Amino acid sequence: MEEHIETMEDYKAELEASFRRISEGDILTATVISVSEQEAVLDLKYYAPGIIRAEDLSDDPDYSIMENLHPGDEIQATVIRLDDGEGNILLSKKEANQMLGWEKLKTAMDNETVLTVHIKETVNAGVIAYAEGLRGFIPASQLSLDYVEDPSEFVGKDLEVRVITADPHKEKLVLSAKSVLKERAEEERSHRISMLVPGTVVEGVVESLTNYGAFVNIGNGLTGLVHVSQICGRRIRKPSEVLKTGQTVRAKILNTNDNRISLSIRALEEAADTDASDSPQAKEYSSGESASTSLGALIAKLNLQ
Image 1 (cartoon, helix red, strand yellow):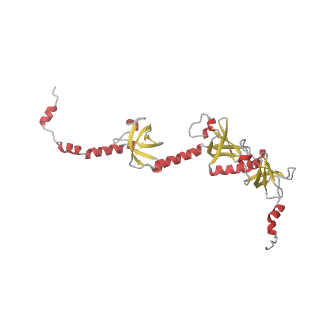
Image 2: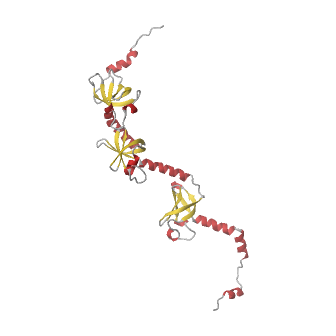
Image 3: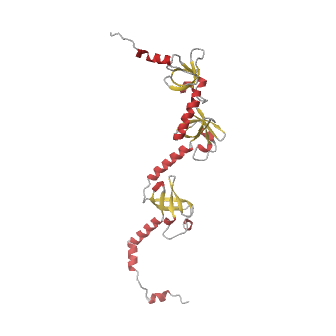
């Protein structure tokens, strides 16, 4: 066998570790070597291993060192002591979260990134969830698209949220599920509108009346507008002359431009009139009608009393 000749390359990692300088306050990226109930041991690529005590991992009261941390995980932590008394470097992931977490959350806020959080508990007027290891508040008004009477119903659930306030100086983190739900609802509504075919006849209920038209609920969460000019064949000043709230009507879809549904009741009336005039009975009746009236017929119709 060919004898291996050691070179400087073989000691590269050891050399880099020997020249490396670590100071208190540094934020290091390290790999988890082992985990126990009390602490995690980290590979810092340094001559001394790193230690994070269980209580220094997260502010989240439900964080479990055995469930949430595993050998091979790569984490970031802050150096809080160069020697813990046993030759280990003592670190805190909790402190790193305070600095790096706020930076990540501010970036998430700027980019409108959607995060998934777990609701931990209720507080006055809202609930608490943790994002990037930091305590965040979701107001009751931001939990749903609908009014929330009892926020405790959300405890234990996962929610998709956006960051709407991330202030590290005031340690204020505010999250919103409502903005995500609103976007999802708009996407779903847009999809349903895209499935509508102009020319289709729909039935709906008049929801409200304005001076310029009537809003008609056509089902499936969609509402269309019948402009005042499309309500009937004769000229009217306002929709209430012909329609009333709660009335069921049939209308034709004119278009779905700009995600708005335009309807016409008049179009159906005009189509019905055209069909009636083209029917055989209508032709027979009109062809048999005399253009003049006899004197005897006029006298017969007179009421001489």
